[in-house]
Image 1 (cartoon, rainbow, N blue to C red):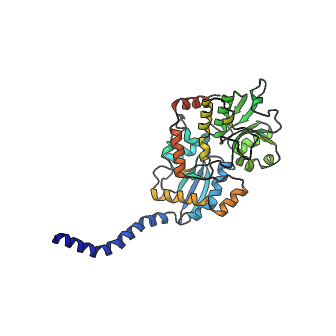
Image 2: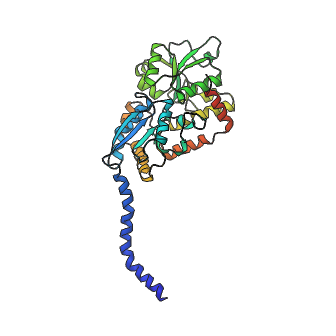
Image 3: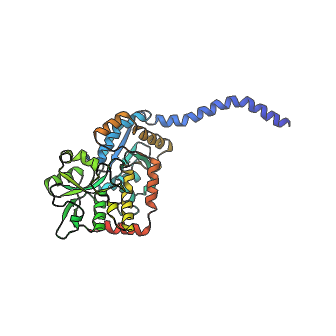
Length: 353
């Protein structure tokens, strides 16, 4: 009994001393993490060429996100195009510093590439630290777009003998090639896909010159990169993706899923469209310290509510429908659970000429 009383008395005497010390120690860790960014440069590396939709989103973020990071670091954007965005994904996964000062903007279709067994994808999508996406395509749509002066008026026209459409694409691994190949296969369309264009601007110029007649592209990107042609009605949308039902801005353009007639075809399009839920994904390398990644994730989502950021996004006609890093992680997990038979069909289509 005496020992119990002594311990109780000692506890009463020591507690007032320990409590402030414990509180102080609890503040030291987050304080050191918050000071980490002060006076430093945060690098955002975009896996696509300058001037395209991804680049526009990244530079918009860079102009505003620094205000929400403790220490307000300088933010620099640079581009690392190649292999349909996978050059950047490989770099972030295995070579970029894991200190929280380098993040990447991945092509939306890249997370599915390891599942498909792509030799170029030397990363595991589920191991990235996902920061967030500014767009989940709530107010945007991805389309196969062609010149308005083309004799092709609809998907049905491309199913007729004698009809042929030349579409341009970037490297493998992007929505512009993947969705075109899947649409061609499902609906048995007479499409020739000419790949290898180095970036959005080069491909758009090819359309303007008549070198190709169209491409796959998001409406917001189209409005920013082919502005005059878009406003003057020189372009026609044949089919839209990223929505189960027609986007309110394109009520006359059918969705791929409404045109699909079998359960298997609908499932194929649903898989191909999952990346639009994380349409402009930002990620950090694996194993970035928890404190730094938490700061980046919070700063990213706080930026999505910033009035100046939203005002500029509206001027650029960009969809802002953000999802958090945790939400992207869940989308990636859904992709990884894709049935084997569906993965095999997807791979077979993408490997076609």
